[in-house]
Image 1 (cartoon, helix red, strand yellow):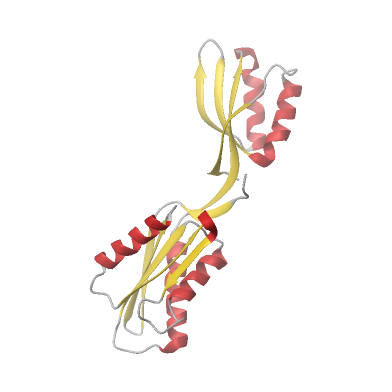
Image 2: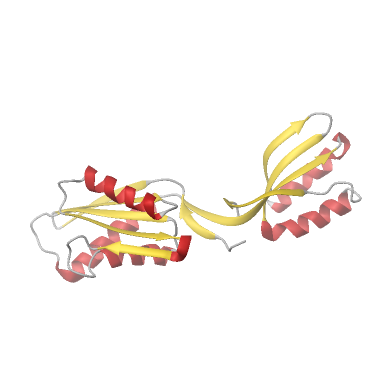
Length: 208
C-alpha cells in the first residue's frame, strides 16, 4: 500500500480585507478532477460578481497539480495558492480564493502575498487529517479471552469499529499497517496461538 498522506475532513472558509479588496479563501476535499472542477464552477456561480476566482488543486490520482490566475497577472495568484498547498503537504484538496477588487492596486508582490494568505487562512480553518495505511481486522474468540485481548488494544492505538457478543466475541478493529505485525505477535503469545486476526480490508484512515 502507498505511504500516508494529508488531506482535510470537510470544507472550510475564511476571509480578510487587504487595501479595500476582499479575499475569500475556501478549501474542500476532492477525490477526482471532476470534483475539483465542480467546486470551482460552484464558487464562480456563488461569487458571480467577484473580480477573480483564483484556484488550485492537488490530487493523489496521477499526481495532478493545477492552478489558474483567473485574469490576475501571470504567476501572482494561482501559483501562490498552489505553493501553499504544497508547503502544507496537502493532497486531494481544492482551494478557490475569491477577490472583490477594492479600487486600490496591490502590485505583483502584494497580489502574491494576498493570494497566499487567502489560501493559508482557508487551510488553517480546516481540520487536517493524517491518512495512514491501515488494516481492518476481524477477531473471533471466546468470552474468557475478552479481558486480556481488550487490555492490549490501546497499546497499538487500535480503534474498535464493531463488536458482536453472540456465541463468541467478534470484533472488527482498525490498526495502522506499521503496528500490525507486532500486534499479531503479541496476540499469538497472549492466546497461545488460538486467536489470529484476519485482514478483511486495507484502506487509508485518519489514525496515527
